[in-house]
Amino acid sequence: MDTKLTLMQIFALSTAGMCHALLGSVKIPLSRKLEIDEARIGSLVSVFGFTLIPMAFAAGFLADSWGKSFVMVGGCALLIAAVLVLAWMKNYATTLLSVLLLGTGWSALVNVLNATQGPAFLPLEEIKDRLSFAMNLGDFVFGMGAFVMPIAVAISINKLGLRTTFLLFAGLLVLPLALSFGVDWERITAPPTADIEDAFSTLLADKFVWICCVAFFFHVPIEACVATWATTLMKDHKVTETRAAQLLSAFWLTFTVSRLVAALSLPKGFDHLVVVVMAGLCVVCTAGLVLSRSRELTCGLLITAGAILGPIFPILIALLLGHVDQPLHGRAIGLFFCIGGIGWAIVPFAVGTLAKTTSVQKAFSVVCGCAVCLTVLCIILNFAGGH
Image (cartoon, rainbow, N blue to C red; front, side, top):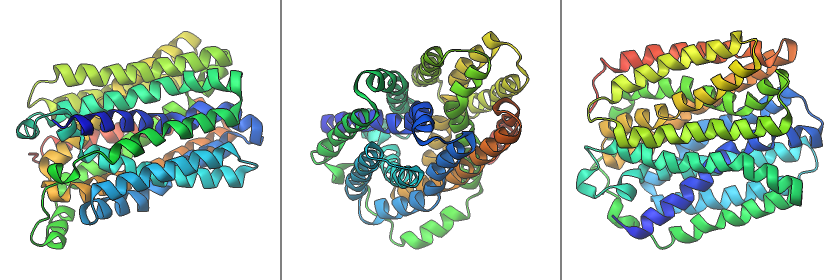
């Protein structure tokens, strides 16, 4: 393994996780500062997801054609710009611009980081057989960033204010950018296929690839909605704002630890079975959130949701990349996040709009429906033929 690559991967994954949790972490002070309701918060989350649709696809093409290093540097630069815009936001339009930049930069960053999970955490000769381990281990690091974000933001805002908090985070994002210049990108990049466009056409015709992508379409909004509205669900059950922030961090902790457990304990060949079981449990958990009338049950289900949701994404993308030739990994990941971005754009918007006329809890019936569809697709994936 390349030590410089591993170090860059750890810092980049941590900050990518922080960016993933950023909107949920600042939702309450942001809505208070801008004087906006749940529907407009939902719109911001949807805009973040919407940017994935074209930008994830574009990042995949650029990574395969221009190189991972170019996409990595560009992604970090855009994230820094997004956070700096947030630091000086004046109104909803400014915030919207920052979210567009955030989604674009994040799309570029995660495309490269998912493609380099294997070589960052495994010897090159072991990648094919242990890709689920590398994906779960890398996403454990990602989840650690998401876990510390709500706590760090709450402490920083109380002591330093919202603007200084964003400025400190922008400074932190410089670290993975600087470390990326020390990575030997040629060593971990396979030469392109003789006719990459024909190979890409084959990729688009592959039913296994499409099932993975559509499964992610239903999975990613579940994760986004739970992370974004967890604090609101708890506040509606009379949980204090401080306690809700602490429990949101507990959600991210279980989310993170479940990935480490999966990395260390998932037997070879059991990927499909585990993802089906987790998706089924996701149905039970989200249905419980819709029906719960108890503060304790709601808080418990939200924390449990973290443990259930955690390993689903790493296993899905490990199955995808294990099935696709390496020279097309950028485009496969781009397609994966592009399709997922459509779900990320549509579902939180629907939940936010429905919550405005009913309640967030009732609106979570949409999230439960996504969990049902995810389960069905994971079952179908088991018979579609993998790697």
